[in-house]
Structures are given as structure tokens and as C-alpha cells.
Image 1 (cartoon, helix red, strand yellow):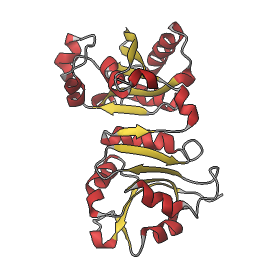
Image 2 (image 1 turned 180 degrees about the vertical axis):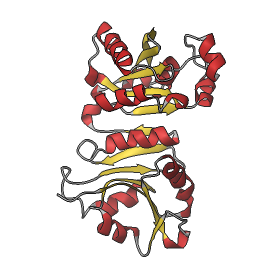
Image 3 (image 1 turned 90 degrees about the vertical axis):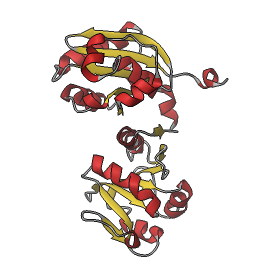
Image 4 (image 1 turned 120 degrees about the vertical axis):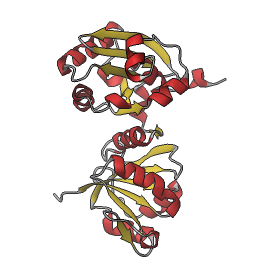
Length: 267
């Protein structure tokens, strides 16, 4: 079986380059493609001719694509070249303003759902997932920890919190934390083991949300926010219901938020 390169970021208009370069900076192992008339910089790649022709030549080269363009362009271009969902790549589409990261094709088999979450966490947009099984995942785990906290301690706390209200691992949609903690080994390991996408928010987003959460003077003095696990989970869930408030153990903190049902979101 042929080996595919990781991910390709592709634009068709210069207007998409700001977002594309921001994403490439956050994910330097990904390739960035653009029309040659957009003057690719060092480390970037260009193509001549139509985007559809480029895609036909490269569709099997990458395991995933992030197309920064209108979804209609992508749909028309891939309609004749994707054979089945088992072998096709994961395809994510972002608008040029970086508002949404849409898992368009290959949500599970191609990894597009996970890719959409990853893109969203890097550029601060909303991941859009429409696969049916994702509807059953309606909990967000907010996590925080001291520097180099023990992974087994964090894992034990998470499982204890879930067990306390009889929520299964499969009902958790994602983890959330502050950007200052996104590279903590224990948080990354938790995300990897349970395949929970990690959604990351800045202190400006946390403070701007002005949420009523359990405030910690230590956290506020240290990193300038009232808390990490509660507010990030509430933001990630689009202001859902705080089911388990901040719970701490051995330098780790966890909060659990349930996303609102569709009817609960209506005015």
C-alpha cells in the first residue's frame, strides 16, 4: 500500500493566504499549495492551471487536505475522483475568514473529523462535524494542570469524574484547555490515548467570554485568567451546562460540560 504525505493546505485565491500561512506556521510539517501567480515563498509550493487539475494529480498523495476556499469549488472538483470513503482522504474546508473548519468528506475513515478539530484549535475557529455518530458525543472535558503534571494522575481524575455521573468515554467529544497548557505532556497523552481532539483557547478569549466560573486567585495571578478547565469547556460547548465543576487532584484540574440539545438552543 502506498504511503501518503501528511496534510496539504490549498488555496485558490490570494485572499486565503493569510489564514493558510497562519495554519502552516502552527503545523510546519504540512505542505502549502497555491497558484503560482500568488508568488509562493520559500518552503511553499505553487501550481499552474486549474485547481481541479492539480487535485486530480495529487488526491492520492496526501492523507488529508485543508482547502481554504468555497465548499462548492471542492465538491465540484472531487465529485468524479473519490471512489469510496474507505480509501479516500480526509477533506476539510475553511472559509477565507477562518470562521469554520468543515469536515466535508472522510469524517471517520479519512480522519476529517479529527483534522477539523485540529485546524479549529490552531486558528481559533468552529469545527463543523455532521457525521451521525458525533451527535452522541455531547460532553466537553476542560482540563488544566501544573507544569509537567503526572499523566496517570490526570487520567485517574478524568475517569473518576466521568464515572461519578455515569458518562462513558465515548460520550466525550473533545478536551479543552488554555493555549499556555496545550503542549503539556499529560494533556497531549490524554488526547492521544482516548482520541479526543484538543480545543485550545487564549486568555483573551477566556476573559472576553466573561463567564461565571469558579475563580482561582493562584491561576489568575499566574496566567491572568480566573480559571482554565471550566471556562474553556463552556466556550468549547458554546455555553453548555456545567455538569461537574472544577475538580482537582495531584496538580490536575478537570471540569465537565454538557452541550445543549438543539431544542435548548432555540430562543
